[in-house]
Amino acid sequence: MRDIALAMFIFGMIPFILMRPFIGLLVWSWLGYMNPNRLCFGFAVNFPWVQLVAIVTLVSLFISREKKKVPVSSTSVLLLLFLAWTGITTYFAVVPAAALSKWEEFAKILVMVFVTFMLVNTRERMRWLVWMIVVSIGFYGLKGGVFTIAHGGSYHVVGPAKSFIADNNALALALCISVPLMRFLQLHSPSKYIRWGLSASILLTCISVLGTYSRGGLISLTIVAGALFLKSRRRLAMVVAAIVVGMVGYHFMPQKWTERMDTLHHASHTDSGETRIQSYEFAANVALHHPVLGGGFFVYESNAMWQRYGPEGAIPRAVHSIYFRVLGEQGFVGLSLFLSLLYVSWKNCRVTRKRTRDVPELKWAYDLSSMLQVSLLAFMTAGAFLPMSYFDLAYQLMALCALLLFHVQQLLDQHPDGLDPGQSREGFGLPTTRRILAG
Image (cartoon, rainbow, N blue to C red; front, side, top):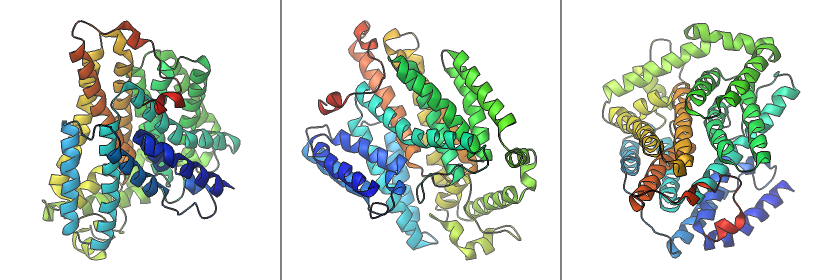
């Protein structure tokens, strides 16, 4: 029944996508982040739903009256350069077949990121996209939080199979990214019931991060909590949530969870910590000997490269760091582009915060830029321990950072004498279907 229901929903959405390509972008985001097909049991599990929706969305965009122009910005230029550079390194990759497959996957992601640049051009559409991310990732936060409480934290919380967030550590990263976005929606939702629901979602999502047993997730969650306290308004709620989650972790989680988290004090002496360090040394050695091109995607799958550049006695494994993985696969040029993307995205949010700080009508933009910064911080910290360099959500967040600044600059340039106070009245509650169909 799940398979049939999913198929009926997606095929039923195709006419709406053909009318409004932005609907296609939302459905693509939902499929990519939530992976509902992985919750099915039959033909829907392996059907290429994401590709289908992406193709229909591109067709719709081509025939629609939407502007087909990507706003020129540092982010869009860097994304294009990074895509081109990964294509060059793929041509010279050590593991050519696997590298080509990965590059095609990454290219498809960035195509839809550029579609995001074209279509997310209003405050309303930003609201829809943020809600879609929160609902998609938050589903596993709610589910995982309830599961952790119901089972006393005895079992690991994991994501949907064969997805970007299948691994418990990857799911923890995605959940930490989603918490600041939930907080933003909570601050700007006009309905008290939606705010209460988002409060419960934030709490359960944080508990779900504990339930993943991810040490990197715990570090990231701690940093996110501190950043939310510094950057968010109405901080008492954040303090209460932090206390509740801390008490759950200390008094509720089982002994095996505590023992696993205690290994953070001597991570380099644990088996996983030691093999991670070995993978970092391997990636660094590959980059030092191939500083321009690196080894290409999946260079760590080459036993010959491990024998040549891995430390003595090293166990071949994936490079569990977004930074070292890019370094080993794309060389110093690729790493420079990747770090530049992170820096520019952070800077875009900082500039947006500065320009909207004293504009009451743009309080929503100030808060959104603040929370996007915290989400980026979650990616940069948890990602330091994970091979999630090409996570689709991270690149869509980068696009959102650039689009938000572009939108704010347009508003301020068009209204040099001040904005219409009416622009601050509309909250960020659940959008209505009528509004999105109206464009």
